[in-house]
Length: 93
Image (tube, rainbow, N blue to C red; front, top):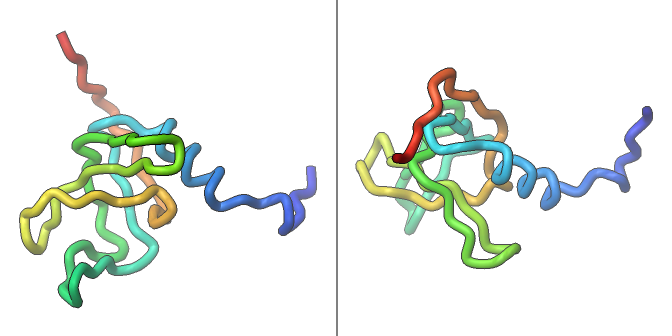
């Protein structure tokens, strides 16, 4: 199957990431992430998905903890360049 450039939709791909990944999996960003001019998350580092949020269909995010500031950061799946699936899945009782 040949995929044409016009058939690729990054927003659909990012939504797929959000639905596919679970808490405990890790995401890797395509670029450094800054807030108010300060480095918050680094490109190429794996960040554990602590939670996922969905305010509505177009407002989805992963929650990760910054290794720089220790803050919880909301990351849109569009910023995810790669991911790692956790071999151990968390279970809620």
